[in-house]
Amino acid sequence: MSKGRVEAFSDGVFAVAATLLIFNVQIDKTAAGGLLTALLAAWPKYAAYVASFLTIGVMWVNHHGMFERIARLDRGLLFINLLLLMAIVFLPFSTEQLGSNILVPRDASTAASLYALNASVIAVFFSALWTYTLTHPALLTPDVDREVALRSWPRFSVGLVAYLACIPLGQVSPIAVVIVCAALAVYYVFERLPDISRQPARQH
Image (cartoon, rainbow, N blue to C red):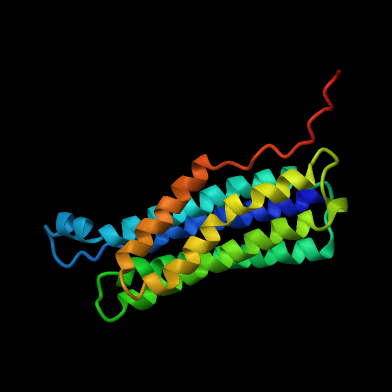
């Protein structure tokens, strides 16, 4: 399977998942003249939407950056990528549960932990995709310096650790889960994939 075909399929899945998020933002208007109140009361859905859209968007950007460093594919890489996309497509569902239940006392903690679990699974598969590639040098482009890439990997494990921490955090403060996930998305906007190209030898 060509790399272009896999990238096109992946882009399509990212786009569908991001688009589905807006369908979760439903307004509960009970009577004429109550639109403003209903719009204001839906703030948890807006917050969950923003956090999830930024998360999907940043992952799409980094997924593209990762595939720029991949020269060829094998079946192992294909299946890990497929698992990553499966977890991403589930995000609109967990987002809807979070936005609808975050103010429901008996359900907020469950919804927040479900969302954090979904985000953790995405982070696990994203890390697995890059780790698998680094441990199979034949898949990388010739200019990639594996040693530099391996040294830079811990910087990008921040998300995985934080998402895992959000699973128990959801049982204590569901609102905090939304804040942490949104903050992580902003973090990865600025924490770009490093330059891991081989540097030319200096002339003496």
